[in-house]
Image 1 (tube, helix red, strand yellow):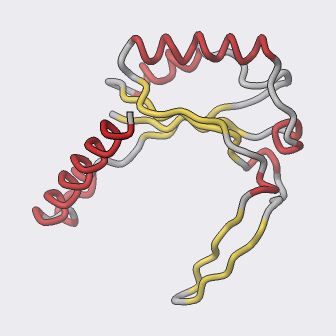
Image 2 (cartoon, rainbow, N blue to C red):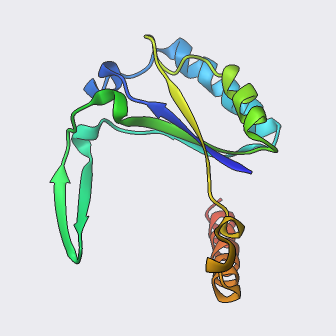
Length: 145
């Protein structure tokens, strides 16, 4: 099972305030534990929403909205993508995570859909396409390192 761990933004993260050296070291140690356990697939911090954009879809129309965006608590400051056996295991890992900020903060744990979760809608052709894309991404990742 894959889970996306969503680090919610704070006023500090939205202002562009960088973490302390101690927090960077603590987070590095935690990330290393995830890597050593073989559960970390990806993980990154994100720039403030002022540097971002949104695209609104209305039928065939596309509207670009530049940041910053309101409601800081609803924004994402970073993420991990982990692969574990259960939601409970994901929770246990994240309970060991250092507080991502020097203030009160929150992370959200969400399971990632797998093609098999879509049942009959995931035709054999779609499953084959997904497998090809994953293999190609793995090749590209290996070639980049």
